[in-house]
Length: 211
Image 1 (cartoon, rainbow, N blue to C red):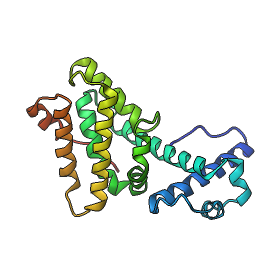
Image 2 (cartoon, helix red, strand yellow):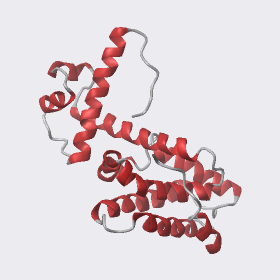
Image 3 (cartoon, rainbow, N blue to C red):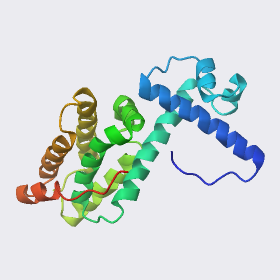
């Protein structure tokens, strides 16, 4: 879960813990079946909080599930920040993003199921991986590493391809996910204007451990 500074007093800490329990319950529901029609009572029971506590934090189920998706996206983005902080090449960052996402289907299944089911709605969100990917695309274009394309349009192409890869990982668990991710990363880099030989090499550079 994304880490936040602890609230200052006992009441604030308990309030924050209750809110996070509701968000965690909503995340589990989204990951399991995506059923946002579940009752507030059922959500409260899964969170192990009182029914009345729900409205102390959220005005509606829609607001709660939106918070749950944003929470998952931010965890996704933070996972990338932690593992890719030493990489400066925007092409390598794009390729590593695809490859790490494929591996996270196994290491972070709840997170990736949420991305699979709700990611398209948040493709241009200001939270999670999207702003990080947009930043890398903008740097790549400005530096000449990528072709002079509109970074926002390129983000749509990258995001759609990434979501397709995540879907592939869950619907075809027998497939070699690493190999599929490498091949897709290479294709995306070539689409962005990286020369073929360079794209081939960059897509196969060593990855950090996800453990």
